[in-house]
Image (tube, rainbow, N blue to C red; front, side, top):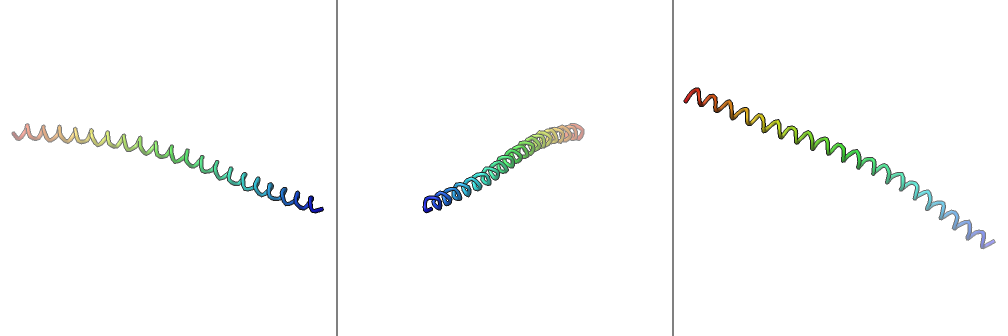
Length: 75
């Protein structure tokens, strides 16, 4: 009888460990998915920043050209 009780306790502990394992496995998968999503979002933002930097550089060139034209007209 004592052996059965020990076996029941062991089975209960194994069951608890398995439940915790499955819960942590699910949480881990959710976190991985979130990381993938965040990396994707980050990459899109980096691309947008790069585009804006290029646009800004083009605007600076346009401004310089306008200033040069104005100076050539005035000068």
